[in-house]
Amino acid sequence: MSELKGIYALWYRETKVFLRERSRIISSVVNPLLWLLIIGGGLGSAVSFSGINYQTFIYPGILIQTALFSSVFFGVYIVWDKKIDFMKEVLVAPMRRTSIFVGKILGGSTDTLIQVLILFVIGFLFMIAGIMPDLNLTAFSVLVSLAFLLVTTVGLVSIGLILGSQMESPEGFQLIISFLVFPLFFLSGALFPITNLPDWLAPFIFVNPVTYAVDGIRGVLLGISRFDLLFDFTMVCLFAMIMIFIGTYAFKKMKI
Amino acid sequence: MNIIETKNLTKKFEKMTAVDNLNLQIKEGEIFGLLGPNGAGKTTTLLMLVTLNPPTSGTATINGFDIVQQPDKVRKSIGIVFQDPSSDEILTGYENLKLHGWLYDMADELREERIKEVLHLVDLTDRKDDRVKKYSGGMRRRLELARGLMHHPKVLFLDEPTLGLDPQSREHIWKYIEKLAKEKNITIIITTHYMDEADKLCDRLAIIDKGKIVVLGSSEQLKKDIGGDIIRLKAQTLNLDALKKLPYVKEISPCDGEVCLTLENANIHLQEIVKVVGKIDSVEIRSPTLDDVFLHYTGRVIRADTPEGSWAEKAMQASTKK
Image (cartoon, rainbow over all chains, first blue to last red; front, side, top):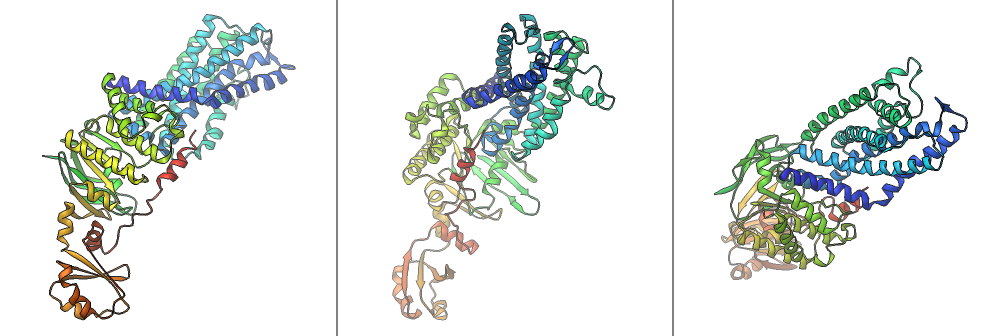
C-alpha cells in the first residue's frame, strides 16, 4: 500500500509539472508538425513509397520521434532533480528504489502519451481533410499503435532514467542528443523504407529496437511493413523489459 | 536509551578524510547539535546517517537499525530538512506538502491536519496555493522545514535549519523545534555554524573540526570547562611576563591580533591586571561563548558569515530548472 501511494505521488508530480509547463507541450507538438509539414510536404511532392505519399509515410515515424525525444529527455530531467535536492527528498523517503523507478516511468510515459495523443488528433484532422488520405486511423489501429508506443516509451524512458541516474551535470544533454537520440531516430526507418537497404546500413537498422516500433505502427496505420506485427511487438516488449531490468539496477546503485 | 550510536563512522573522499572515526551517542528526546566551521564534516555525517551516502568504514545505528544493513528501516524512523532547496518549484507549497505526505504513507485525514498545522507554524497558510517559484528564499526555507516536521519522525535531522532566515523567523522556528522535542519526544539533530543557535537550542553539542569531535557536552559545561570569564586586551606592547606570574590567570592566548585572558571572577582581578600589564588601548570583559570554546580547542574562530554555496545562490540555480 505504502509503495503504491509513493508511486502515485511521483506520477502526480511529473504529470502536474508537465501539464503546467505549457511551453513543453507546445514545443513537443510544434516540432513534429514541422517535420510532417515541411519535410513531409516538401519531399512528398516528389517522393512516394508503395503508392503512399511521403508525408503520410513518415507519419508513424514522427509519432515515434516524438515518443523518442520526449521519453529520453524525461529521464535526463533527473539531473535537475539532483541539482536541486528534490531527488534527496525522494530517496530518503521510506520507499523502495524500484518503486521510485516505477513512479518515474509512469510519469514519463504519461507525458509522452499526452503528446502522442495530440499527434493522433492532428493525424485524424489531416486524414479527414484529405491531406493524408491513405492514413488508416480506426479505433483498432489507434489502439494497436498506442500499445506499441506505450511499450516503446517505457523502454525509452528507462534509457533516459538510466542515463539521468548516472549523469552529474546537464551539459551531458548535448552528447545524448548527438550520440543516442539522433542515431536511434535516423536508424529506425522513420524516414525511409527498410526493405532494400545497403548492406552496410542494414545491421545498424536491425539492432535498433526503435525500428520494430516504427515497422509495427506503420504496418497497422498504413499497411506497409517489413516484419510480422507480432514479431515487431515481441521485439519492442523485449527491449522494454531489458531496459526496465537495467534501470532498476541503475537506480539501486544511484548515488547523490 | 541511545537512539543514535555511531561506531567509528568514517567517510573518505579521494584524498581527504571528511569524517574521521566518529563515535557519538545521542539520547532519545534530546536536541543534539553538531557545531563546526564550514567543511568540518557536519553535512557528510548527516548524509551518512540518513542513508544517502554510504560510509567508507564504520557504521551507526538509528532507532536500533543499522544504517548500512537496514537502510529501509532507518528511513522509516527519520525525517530530514536539507540545506539546499528540495521542493518542486512548479508545484504549489501545498502540493509539495501533500506529495511528502504520500511519500511517507500518511493517512489522508492526518496528512491534511498536519499540513494545516505546519503551514500555520511557518506562516505560509496564505501563500499555500502559490507556486514555490514565487516564494522568496526565506519562504522556501520555511516550506522545507514545514515539510520535514510534517510526519513527526522519531529522529529529525536539520541541516543548517535557519540558514539565511531573518531573526524573527529564526526565533519562531527555534521555539517550534523545542516544542517538538519536548511534546512529541522527537530526537532532533541539528548541524549549524551559528553559535547562538547551538547555544540556545541544543541540550548537548559536539564541536567538530576536520571530521573529528573536538569536544562534547552541554553548552554550559563546555563554557565552564574553559574556565570562567574572558578579558580581552588591546595594546601596542603588553607585559606578558607579568601576566604569566599572576596565579589566577588560567590561560593567555592570542585572539584576532589581541590578547585574551581566561580567568574566574574577572571583575575582581581586573584592576591588578591592568596595573601590571602596562599601557593598554582598550579592555573588554565578557562571559565565554561557544566561539571561545572552539577557539580554546582549535586555536581558530568559527566564521559565521559565508556558508559555502549560499542559500540564495542555490535557489537561483534551482530557478533555471526545466
